[in-house]
Length: 119
Image (tube, rainbow, N blue to C red):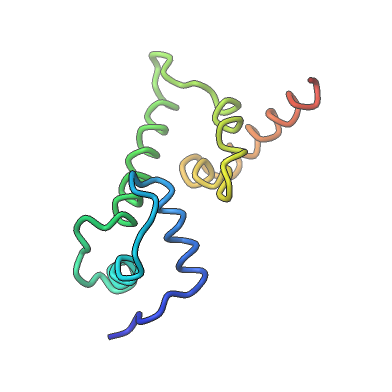
């Protein structure tokens, strides 16, 4: 079977998904199981923390986008999101770019930097 070894790039991507999971670590076997599933669609690894994190990422992104278009005032504002995400190591605003697109996040980042300069 292919996918017998995890590359640095694949490990970094899995760490990104783990950052959204309740359990923030995975065994080497869980990492390989997820890689096989993610790459080839083979044997969905039930209870895998990486898969759980990837699912949570999608759910959280959907919730954030729903709030953005909420007409009842549920949106906290992009500036506040950037302020929250900018210091998250090592991924920073990457989730915001995935959920809202690079142009919108760029505007929010510029507004954030503008506010920081005025301090």
